[in-house]
Image 1 (tube, rainbow, N blue to C red):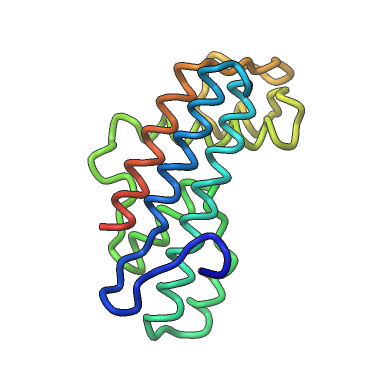
Image 2 (cartoon, rainbow, N blue to C red):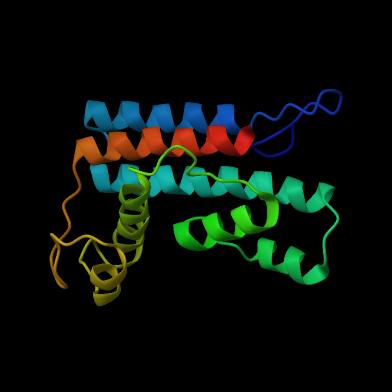
Length: 167
């Protein structure tokens, strides 16, 4: 295998979802041991999901005939923007990554926004975060302190989403 992910040309099985589960369990283990902060675990977990989702979409692009504009749209897709990628995958391919997760959708969306704050804003809530995340407990300028519980829940949700993508 060149790179991270591979598949069997004979049966079509991909190792992407399994690879993500292993990576997320490694992150969870580091979190539990105290070797990784909850905010860093959120960043790494969403990054793992983004990478795995990109692999699946790259395969879709290579296997499904589509107009050039659709292909370009998918190639530019960012998988840490939950609303955009969920809508595009549902509309184009009838893939519902949040299938059966109606109660967790808002949580996952909030955590994806938090990942952005942790990655780019030094863990300090921006106006965009306040307006778009749905997190009514945080105000602009607040330092967001992540919890181990939220991080564990996010890891479980990401694994469920990837299992849906795989299925």
